[in-house]
Length: 127
Image (cartoon, rainbow, N blue to C red; front, side):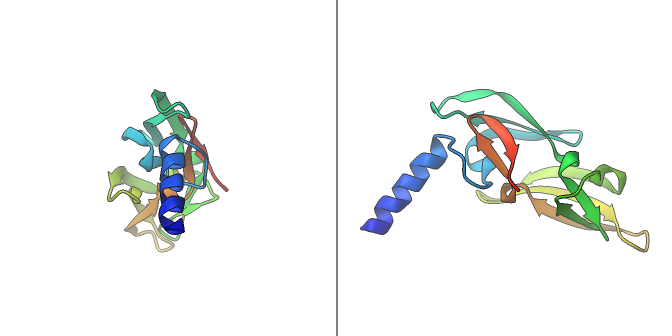
């Protein structure tokens, strides 16, 4: 019974747009890329959707030997053909082909839900 109550409480908090690490796609809609900028309409604490929020992915994601990585920057300089895929409720993916150490482009992806949150209808980075 306690697990059910805890689950309902956590879902209510998420639906209200409260902050906890990552998971932005669970409280946002119309998620898309504009170049390397992530854009979405996200729920506020009141439960309504705010104006479009924009997040500069290139400021927080880089590439290392062909893989997209957090806590870096400038993936655009080493990657091409990037795009957004909503693979599931929990997986909001940035996909790309990035150059590895021998100069070949390899397919890679990173789950944006790992580090991007909806904070009162604004996309924010979680360290």
